[in-house]
Length: 216
Image 1 (cartoon, one colour):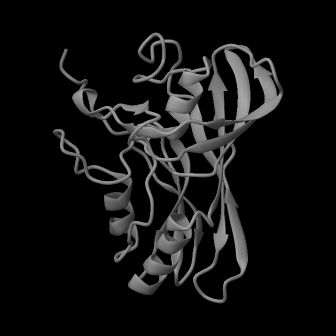
Image 2 (spheres, one colour):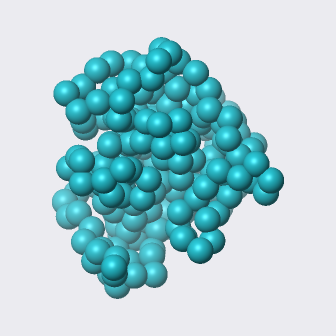
């Protein structure tokens, strides 16, 4: 079956913070972080921000169907500084998700190594032989008519980490088109949102944090 056409959302991009070193935006669900290969893939958050603030530079990514806080650099020095924080796992990331089922515990940690599922790209999979270390802490923070609300704190930043980890423990994210049991048809969107990002400011090193409430 061919992939669905890429139809990026329209409307203004919400800026959470802007200064001489960095730009923090609230990424809409359904918008690529960077240009993609498919038709229309040039339409992405980075391109829109570059139109608004020339010179905006990429630091990290969110999946197309994930919404929430993303930080961008305004110049090369800030890009290096911020990039190292993600590489060294100093950035503190917090997500909110709605998942199928109710975990038996109120909190826990998922420690399952991940690697690319090459025949089924872009899917990822658990592999205890060649997978890279991947850890996710989770906590139940509420109930919802559609499922259970979790707070997720990834220690590592592997591709699709939260989505694969939750599917592997039997609680896939609602609306997930790759790892959900119904191919994403059980919700109006993928119910995963980057709600908080904490890091050190490139100038001065002060601890800063940026938040965006989950829209579900």
